[in-house]
Length: 335
Length: 164
Image 1 (cartoon, rainbow over the protein chains, first blue to last red):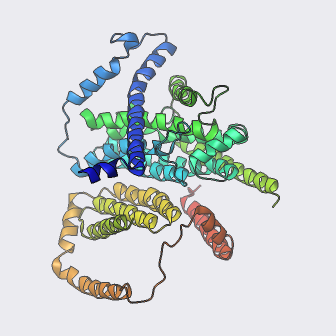
Image 2 (image 1 turned 90 degrees about the vertical axis):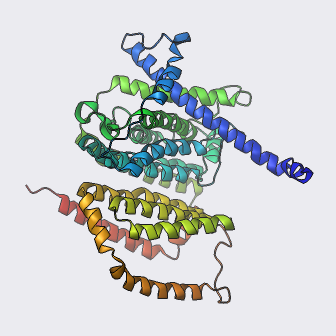
């Protein structure tokens, strides 16, 4: 027994336990802020459309999220008889877990962050690639025309936008010389935020980020006027809830990545050492709100317009950005 | 790391077997995705994280997505599943199974501990190492591969062009 206590109190094990506790706290924070974002979205949309929005439950209507969650937990979780059961259940699990995994590599403050793997950014691309399966399988397993069409659209959209999502970030990787997100943030704090030298990269990345999270104006996979609810038409109860919350987790994750990649992470104009988390949270909140503003401001484009914008504008732009950045980096290194 | 390697390898073997035996094409493809992920994990344990991540991005995240995409569009219903069940009869499977067992035996002979083999995973291969090798000794191969891809791109454009 005492040997076990000794083992448990050794510094290595304590550090491992502390790291796990931190990871769980970050996970909880991520999911809670994603759920809270549903309220934020409804309130902000209402504000911009000259309405009140949900303001009845709790202060400012903050309790609305809790009420909604209770409701969705107790709804009947109905699996239609015509679906492919195993894949039907698998799809929402992938949707939510992949978006949560993406947050693994976002450095929050100098000491907080789940993982600072050397290939962090590549891991994010891998996870983004696997997230496609959620909508695709959801659409196929539902065995309904609306779902299948939504799934097909979404797959084509996500694959196209993933191509230059990767390419747009390669400029950042070249300049910083690493795939490690924490080192990218530190590089920006010593030099300049990447929004300045990599402005084109940022423009392409933000388009791709909106497309990958399936948000308006790129929410054609679930365009309700054409496809009922798209790939999640047949879903109900908590399975639908996982698709729904997964989308918001994706927004928080992508905002965190944008802050880390282009806006210097936790660095602020003053007190960077004292309140790094506050700066990170403020920047994150700004990008989360811009997602909502986009939804409030822009109509949905036609599907073929969206695809040709991807291949004819964004892809050449990111390739040119890649070439120019490469040339400048080589020039500066005197090669 | 060793335990992780064996677990991942076992998952890869099992899911690859399920790819062959699963009668539903989409389920078979999903097992293939799982198998690729497991192989990526073995790459990690062997000290090649870059190859592992690329395996996930390129194979599991892009190529297999296209496979599943096409199979989804074919709308293979219950009839295909039945057909697959009939085709995979024990009699038909016996011949290939015997041949594969012989190969497995040979493989086992090769990886026996007494044979001399270069050990994998003695050092970690980073993205930089891969890049230096690709643009050093293998530059010609990279250029040739890019020519091949360009040819494929032109051909795909030609086939996809609508008739005026």
